[in-house]
Structures are given as structure tokens and as C-alpha cells.
Image (cartoon, rainbow, N blue to C red; front, side, top):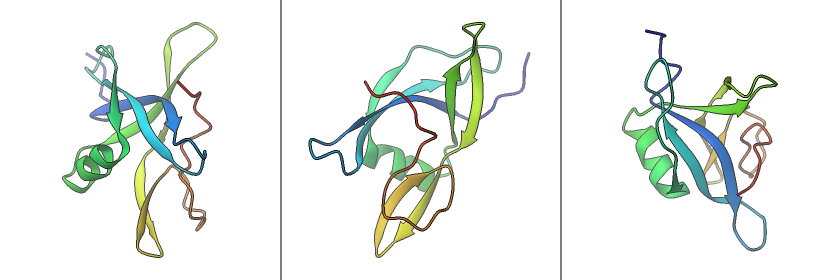
Length: 102
């Protein structure tokens, strides 16, 4: 059995109509040696889950079509607003490894 990367992998994002922030992510449970079926989750639900200690990592398909590990996802609070990030850049935008949109 392979060590889990996180509780869930995030493989894609959906932005709000003005494209200013992510409103949904495609989440897939990390089962250790594989990933389960994916589902769309609201951004606020992911923020709440991270606050409760649930872990997320970005994932993407490699050249061999297998999942590859990206970066851990965390909350960065800027000017009283929570943003989902993989890199703490101080910018008031979500940043999840340039994942594809769905």
C-alpha cells in the first residue's frame, strides 16, 4: 500500500463568472494506492474542511496518464478573506498550481 499524499486530491477548478476566484474544485479521495471517484465541491466547503484538519494536495495526470502529486493546498487569509493556495504569494487570488478548468 502506498502512502497517501493527502486526504483528497484536487485535479481541476471552476471559476466564478467574473473569473476572480475559484468557486468549485474537482476533489478525489486519496485511497493510498489509488484515487476514488471525483466530485465537485464548493470552495467554501474545502476551506471549512482545511480548517478542520482535512488535507488536500493538487494532482495532475502525468505523461503515463497516472496521477502525479502537486503541492499541498492551504488557506492564506488576506485582508480578512480566505484564499486557497499552493504558494504563499500575498496576492488576494486563489492559486492552485494552474490546474485545468472544468
